[in-house]
Structures are given as structure tokens and as C-alpha cells.
Amino acid sequence: MPNTKKVDWINDEANVEYWDEYYKKAAMQEESTFCKYVKKQLDKNAIVLDIGCGSGRDTFSFAKDGYEVVGIDRSKEVIKINRNTKEEKFSTSKLDFHVVDLSDERTLNDILESTSRKAISEDKSLVVYLRFLLHSINEKTEEILLRTISKHVPTGCYFAAEFRTVEDYGRDKVYDDHYRRFIDAEDLVSNLESKYNFSKIDFIKGTGLSVYKNEDPYLARILMKKSK
Image 1 (tube, rainbow, N blue to C red):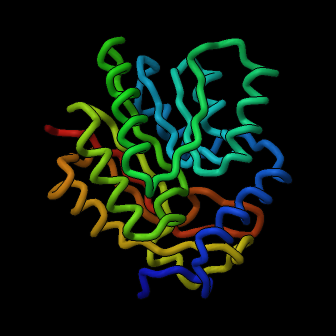
Image 2: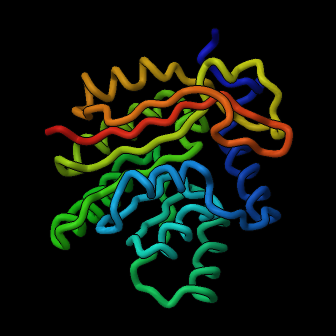
Image 3: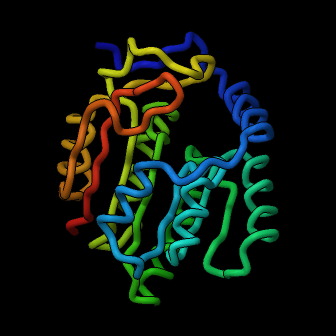
């Protein structure tokens, strides 16, 4: 089973333009089922770093429920939209958005360091939250991301991710015109444990987790904790 993109192109500039245009037209959706799952696992004394926050559907949902939240995305367009939404509908200072390209290690370092320091100073847990992010980046960017997270987050930090697995490769897609790859979930968990010092709390794999229209993707959900 291939661990590669389904579409035949990976022009990075075109991929950024695709998401900028997508977010201009996208309507705000209610929180994802993964967001609901994570909330059930963790208390509200936490800072959530929503990496690849997109339209902010889960970022705003965490904020509404009392979590302190930072949303980051490489799309300048969607961060502008999210900041406008925040100004119009939220008065809290515990919600923020930043443009971050995950392949830019220096910028990624900065946001992880500042968020980790804030969590420590406020005696809060840190939750690194990645919904539908890992399968949308290439393997090189994933390695930069996981290495940088491991380097900068404190012991006890939670790592929560939902992503498409290799089993999803041949299944029907509502949107099939942009870059994605399909991840071997067991290999990822093993790497997080052996290379990046995370311990497994929960691991779920299958369908029925995030149904959208006529698409029922084969996904994995992982919840892990930084052990040292």
C-alpha cells in the first residue's frame, strides 16, 4: 500500500494557492468529532496549539469552551479571516492566530518555545493538536515538525493527531484535487515513541470517525504524552 500522495503533483506554490482560495469560500463548520474526542480526554487547564488550524473550526471551539488557544497555519489568507472573526465574535485575549510555515524551522522554533514557556509559567498543560495536518505535508516537513516539537515542548505535553492512513488510499474522496499522502499509523506511533520521546495513551484506527457528505475516510487518532 503506497505511502504517497494520491494526486500527481506537489507544486508547493500551487498547493498554497489552492488552500488560500479554498478558505476564501469555506463556511465555518461546527467542531470536528476529533475535537470533541480530545476535550473528553483533557481538562481545560491547558493551552492548545492548533497546528494547521485552517478555518479555525476547532480553534474557536476550544476557545469557546475555556481553553487558551493558539492557531497557526501557513495560509496568510485564512489567518487574516480568523483574526477578523476573532475581533468580531471574541473578546478574549486567550485566543491568537499566527502565520507559520512548518518547513521554516526557525519560525516553528519560535512559536513552540513561546507557547511552551507560557504553559510552564501559567502552570498549564500544553496540547499540540494536529487534525488532518500530517497527511497534508510531505515527509521532510513532517520530520522537521516532529523533531522541533520534541525539542521544545515540556515533559507532560500532549500530542493529539488525526490523519489519513494507508488504508484510506483507494477510498472515495469529496476533494481529490490537492496534495495528500497516506500514513502508516503504526510506524508513526513507533517513531514518536522511539525517536521523539512520546508515550502512547490512546490509538484508534478505522472508519466512522469523521464522515463528511458521502466520504467516510479511514483514519487514525493518536493521543500521546511527552515522557522526557
